[in-house]
Amino acid sequence: MSKPRVFEKPTGVKDYLPEAVAKLRSIEFQVLDCMQRWGYRQIVTPTLEYYDTVGVASATSDKKLFKLLDRKGTTIVLRSDMTAPIARVVASLLKEEQFPIRLSYHSNVFRAIEEEAGREAEFYQTGVELVGEASAEADAEVIALAIASLQAAGVKQFKIALGHVGFLNGLFEETLLGQEEAQKALKDCLLRRDHVGYRELLNGLGLSAEVRQELEGVLRLRGGQEICRQAQEMTDNRTARASVVHLCEVWDVLVEYGVSEHVVIDLTNIGDFSYYTGMTFEGYAADLGFPVCSGGRYDNLLGQFGRPAPATGFSLKTNRILEAVGRTEGNEPRRVLIVYTPERRAEALCKAAELRQEPGVMVETHRAAGMETEAAGLAGRELISYL
Image 1 (cartoon, rainbow, N blue to C red):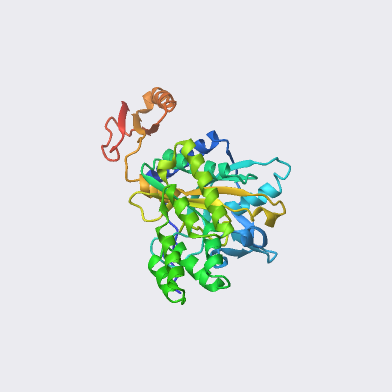
Image 2: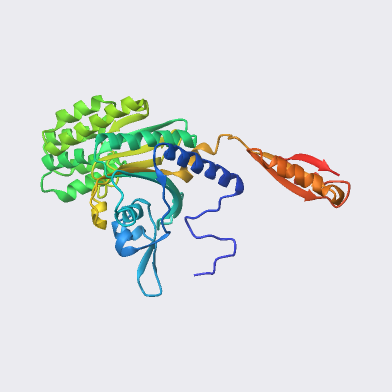
């Protein structure tokens, strides 16, 4: 393997230049402020965690974890999400705090990836966890907050696709009983949004025409509250029907929040079906082919840390949001360059201090070599001269 050149970076990581960082930080601050106004307190956890605790509890597959050995030979990981570390904190440092607990965060996370174009090994997440509340109101709260957070971040056009893992679990239990491998393969197709592959798998399972038609019908379960009625008519399975009832309750609360116009029920949306236990959702911005936020209910995670509790939450993919809003002009700061001679330095620095008290003003000072100042480097900056 050849030695990398000094300006090269590992695959999947990137540099952010000042303009991008300013927009990234603006998104972060606006979103965290929004979350705080909803009662969520910010938490910071370590970049490094033990593999045997947070690593194995994470929703991230083992092969996507960055693993290291410390000097004692213990395996540690770079955090791959924030949910598992927060579960660890809730079960330990916050074990005496009464439920429900509302926490927010903004952090970089790391996932080992294949060398594919556009995939990132380090990216940024801003999100919340609502721990200790199992109701439809809690699920609706995090969806409504996700919508408010996207709006605070400057995303103007988006849709939230809302699903429930219990519906498919129950439907497959009813129609594909004992065919666990087939169930998993079909869910994998839905997770990848591979509807062609889903149909091909159904055709190869030797199902009756009636059952095959019923399972193909899942692909059409996308829309408003009418989808709940259609889904109820598809199955008699108790788990599936209970899941639809829960989604209907969530929808009703979202109507009361006044945000249902941003939501579509999509029963093919199952998130990571090995991790989520109930409601799941993804948010898609206009003109972007990938989700800018995702979340759902994960009631089994806290038990792995010794404090069983229901939980729900979401995360915004902050750097992807940067792609969505970075094309639009934001509130650019007023950039000022103050040029002065030694004789007028006190006067110039006093003016600089005055201007720096104003919001949205960036002030640079420069001692001039003579009575003239060069035009080079002045682009985009307002000149104040003390020559």
